[in-house]
Image 1 (cartoon, rainbow, N blue to C red):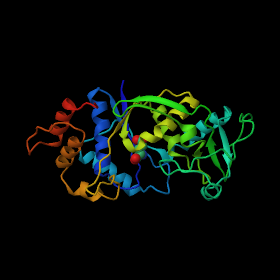
Image 2 (spheres, helix red, strand yellow):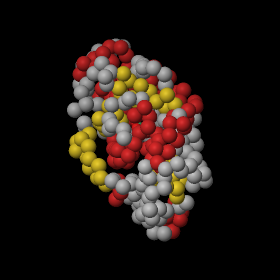
Image 3 (tube, rainbow, N blue to C red):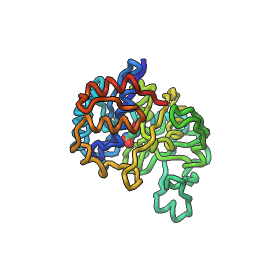
Image 4 (cartoon, rainbow, N blue to C red):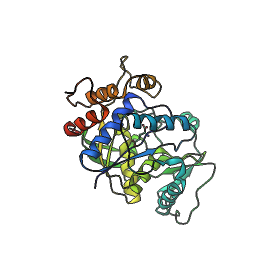
Length: 291
Ligand code: GLU
């Protein structure tokens, strides 16, 4: 059975870009008779607020996007992330690292196309053996040792993707020095434990998906099918962010927002001006395909 999900970070209210992602994953799952889950990605508690979480869930309901089961919150799932880190440590895929962003810049590390520092492995142990039974460090970051960093996959929208995590980013942080688990670790663990087999999300995550694939490989998790939908840009040509158009979304009627989101997804809209949310979603389920 298809299991899709929408996984917003509650660092701002729902905006048109995230409504498009929510709608695309909802329609993809529902069209296939599958389940659609909602997961709140509040793993980085420093960026997230409960009022944004409430606002996002309210907006989903206001737009008729009702999810299956309980909403899952990453902030309550530390035990699963620790388990995954210990599994990585056991397989010698984990090491602690005392480098800071500043020290890496001072040592002349390069930035990748996403503006991230590429880690050349300063703290990488000479011999990777010894992870078995190791406890997680405190006060230091934990990095994933990227041994086989090459990846390739067929994205249902963006097409064939390939790259090298080793070259593009190097050994990456899976738990920060302040104890916060990385998004990459959390998303991989959660998608696996929630049995997600289709991930439909914004194209801003496409360049990060290679990291998810190498982590899935190391943890022995199956890869879900990925489909990354084009981003929504504002009138000024910039990608819409949580702050930009959030107000606009709650000020416009839900049917209008849904029609706009569908137009962005390329669904031909032949609906009367008075179509209800149910009419629109029913019509969309009949006419929506990822391609
Ligand atoms: N939490 C991410 C966001 O709000 C989405 C991550 C994902 O769908 O994997 O942009």
